[in-house]
Length: 636
Image (cartoon, rainbow, N blue to C red; front, top):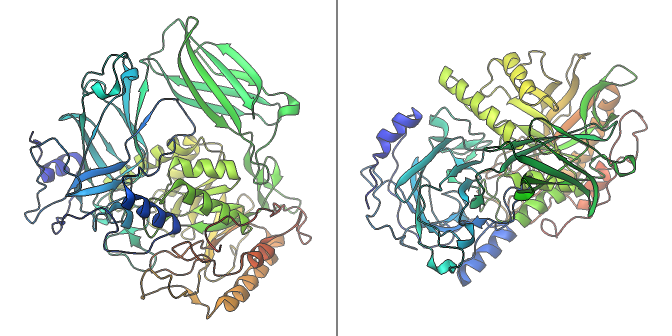
């Protein structure tokens, strides 16, 4: 079977971007792309792969909307890259040819764990899949967690959809393109294989898309590009009428919960049953129609507010009923919490969580991995990173210039870490690029706003791609009126949004002028480099300020933290230390890039960051207690 595609013509027509050809990629065996630095979890995965095929990232990818039945498509796929003539030559045979030229999905091309030495602006993925017999009678959805950047998807040679945006999930209804599903009384072995082809386009810095810190020429604060499929791919059966989304809004004063459902193909005889659980206990239940929000009441004695110290999550179960028959059942979760900017007794604007002031003691996390680049080597690695940051005394993660998988935010929800979320930057130098930024901004907010851990959106960082700031703040406020907005972190301030944000290296510092309507925050400070031999990505390292050894780094950190506390009575409401880990050549993390060494003893970091109860110099600011132990992994 031939693919009737001219890659370059299609790229121009579909995406209106100029793509550069690259040198041809040679076939590789599964395993590290030319060796490279490994995290402990990446090392385990490669050992497992050497013993036999192991599927990475087997966990359910969408924890806010769970169904019982699904099928993971992660694993080894074929991949085809441009040859010397700049064209991608795909064999006529529909049978994948492992391992002649293969990639381990969902790791991006060019990462160690992918097995592919380098990415290209255009790549063609291919795999086979079957549909279980008990899915007969359902629609079949094909889900992608994220593909950087543009994707055209074919099933059995038939185009089933296209998507633009490297940070957002999408799904395609492939029911009409798959082969007939075996009858339910037949074994799965009777199923006919279906051919899945995904053609990916990623211009990185030469295109109009948002890309964060990705670069084809990484150096300093710019890191390697993560092209192609970089989050889980999976299948799901759904009835023709099914629940597509659960939205909740909780009033923490009354305990009422408004539930809004998005249902595909609703019918007049459709009803829903909504049930809320606190742990295993059912605490509220309601049957109703689909013509408006359903209001449930949480008993006063069961109302628990979500905080970093007590990250309590309610489970919500929704059944879609046709008459008395349940045709769909989904499960999600939500939290009771509010976030706002309110004045303290001195008139300074403070971040308030559930109407109580809290200082955002943050740490910057770039979300890069030496073996998986944008993709963590495992879900356990994701959990370990978040627990480590919390155990070191931070209550906030500033997720910098990257949007993570939904499971990352679910771990923050569960562990109790506030998230100060950046919108990744693009160049935004043209009208087309600005429109693309706005489209991707709306898609990112829509995909992640159900996570209670996210309390702040950052529109622009240090002026990169900054444009029409006031207009975009208004747009973002409309998209998500329940979170704070950091309009411009560390650059040109137009007096809009909820934060007046400065950066200072090594700092700390705060905005020179008090703004009576906005909180004063320090979006980035620190950046102190300590080289740890044996744990370097490259010998050509970079940083803002250098420490000679662990003791010198500890002294610097203690000094900066003490100076930070002196700014609290003057109105400082939040700060983000730069940064959690080293990233490639940038070596100013508290943890080495391979996650194997903490540069400062964890007990010292915890002690420096710990402020018990209320700070005596400013009693209006609360700091969460720090009682968790450091998990296995870094520093162990």
